[in-house]
Amino acid sequence: MKNLIPIYTLEEVAQVFKVSLRTVYRWVESGQLKSSRLGHKTYRVFEKDILEFMNKNRT
Image 1 (cartoon, one colour):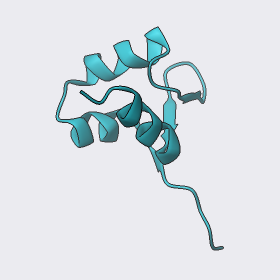
Image 2 (image 1 turned 90 degrees about the vertical axis):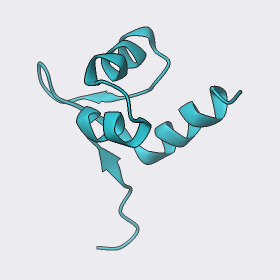
Image 3 (image 1 turned 180 degrees about the horizontal axis):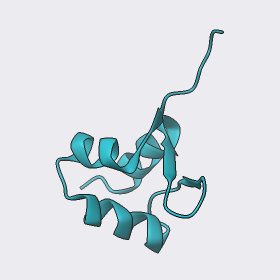
Image 4 (image 1 turned 90 degrees about the horizontal axis):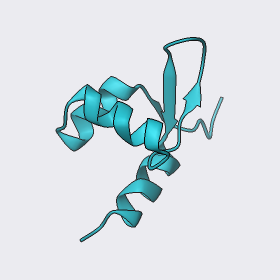
């Protein structure tokens, strides 16, 4: 299998940005960070959505 798209958990996203898990949940709940929900509490974030989030929130 090649060309797999990197997918992150919310915990991994928090580590990348060096923020709390709660902050990442707020970003997801507010719609700032796109995510896919897999079940009741399981979320995944595509790498392209992380890059889009970073570009939109540049200062």
